[in-house]
Amino acid sequence: GGEERDAACYRTCVGDTGKGNTQWEMPGGRRGKVLTRIDISTCGFTSPPILTTALSGTGHHDKTIGVGSPFELTESGFIVNLLGETVTGFENHANPIDLERANRYDWHVMWIAVGSIC
View: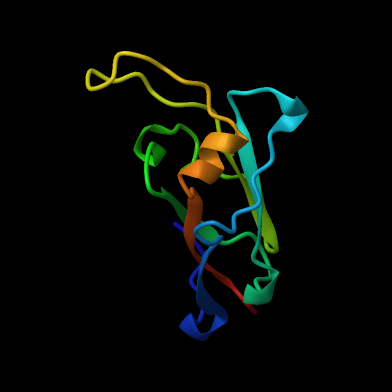
């Protein structure tokens, strides 16, 4: 059981890092992992919200691992780490992800957050 609160104390906030505008980083310069830091401070949450994320783009975004598991979630932001691609029966190889791939395919993170503002 959770604590019941007045619905007026909750806000839904949505965003998109932007096709072609997402600021991807590659920690340590090593291929295989990219991340982006997402600022949600304008939502006005008073604690970390409930968050749903999705990755979109023009290709290869459907096989990435990690978009649904945000890191360092706070009331003002979170990080999405993409840790690589799954190997499928459709393609019999795995290619490490890197900044070039994330940018070439216009990967961007769309998100919905519901959180307390009271």
